[in-house]
Structure formats: C-alpha cells, structure tokens
Image (cartoon, rainbow, N blue to C red; front, side, top):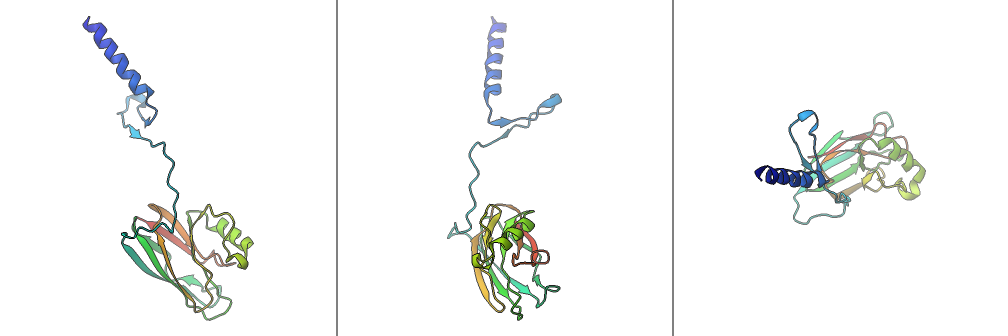
Length: 181
C-alpha cells in the first residue's frame, strides 16, 4: 500500500513539473536544477517622453566641436546614466563654420552606420530622421553653428547603446557609447 501511495505521489509531482512550460531548466547530464522563470509578457516599449516626474535628473553637457571634417567630434565618446533617471543633456554646437551642422541620436547598439545611411536618405527636410525608427531611441533637432538645445528624456532600459551625429559624413567621427547602468 505504501509503495502504491508513494508511486502515485511521485507520478503526480513529476506530472506537475513536466507540464509547467514557464520554467527553463538546464538539467542535462545530471547538472543541478537552475530553473529560471521566463515571463511570457511582451517587453515594454521604450518611450523617451515617458518621464517619471519623481525620477532623479542626471544633467550633462555635450558639445559638437570643430570647424572641419577632420577635427569635428563630440566633447565625449561615452555617456553614462543611471537606470530610472531623467536625462537632461545641454547640447551645444560650438562650430563657427556654416557647414558644421550637428544632431544627436541615441540608437540601438551596432546600428549607427545603418541609421546614418537611412538618415542621409531622409535628408534635411526631415532633419535627417529616417522613416524607420526601429533603431532610434532619441533624436535631437539639427543644430546650426552656435545653436544649442536642452534635451530631456527618460533613460532607456539598462544596456549599452550608441550615440551619433547623422548629418551626412559625420557618423564615422561623431559617435560614442551611451551606457545605462
């Protein structure tokens, strides 16, 4: 009788475990069970305008510098912000040459070249903002020399992103890492 009871209990327990598809296990070759819950809910879409009024503000200064293609650059090649903050970047184009127009895009990691090429196609009438925005997290307006813009947006989710100037011919020199910790 005990054997039947324990066998039934074991069968029912194993049935519950094997039917639960919300868990991922790595239990091959007798390895320790390291079950990890996998959510079936879709990931939330990032919206830079969804600013939490109670979030701390991280204020930074960023300059687009240089009066020729060979020396143009952002004043930094890495921006670090904290998760859950509101990012405030005081962006200034310090150039004096009329040809040195600049913008600032935060894009998904590894997409700066494709975003830059799509931005060229969009052209000045669209502020070099491409139709396909799937790789864009934030975009500024195009700044003429001497202009500035205060950019305020919610920090993206934790991860490594990139920033880039998409004005034609600038992306190769004017780019960097945008890190959310």
